[in-house]
Length: 307
Image: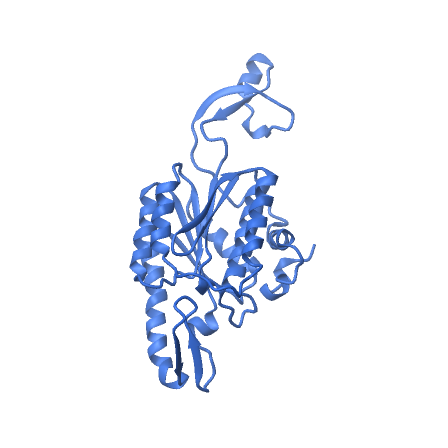
């Protein structure tokens, strides 16, 4: 398997199947780890059950074995250590492809696939939420291989026609809906550029607070093309820009607009980072030019700090 540490997003985009691409990302990062990068939620003992070949030895009750010479395992209220929902933004702005060589949607979908693969390897449950102006799909977490393959197929389908006209974005509406529709405490990983068509960024923060209020651990993977969307590296000649969600177009001189643009975007990214921290939400800014393994490392480093 090719080492994902050495592959750029554009390199991995050439891998023929989506599932293989996601697995390549995981292989490149996880190979050599001897301990799970995840830490499960607290669970309460419920009862014993007979040990079956293949069960994890870490759940064997050795005290019972020493007294009765019987192998039994501890059963807990939670069937898995962790339940994950990946919440992926599929709106029109995510179709933007900058200097990283892949669109934000392709980058986010590949990361989503890698997270599903990682969970499946631990036999933990993983689910998927897709949204634009509202939730368009919500797949409850499961840990079976067929389930993960189904998620891969759904993610792959998102990328088949990225030139199609997309929809506007309402992260806050979608995230409030997710908070109301996930009944059990879970890890919620939001992958989005957090660009909203007609609402201020604080609306998204309020929705993230709603998820935290419901007891979920929340991580935001903020996906952008830093060169153009943050640094406004579009050259010095006049450019014609089109809003992917509203269709509005505008021609401007980069030299005249750059200072004002940088002021607004610096404040936008800093406000999101600060407000996520204040809300107890872990935040990582990911550049679509960044290798996927580095993005996963940022994610896992954030995850470790939760415990």
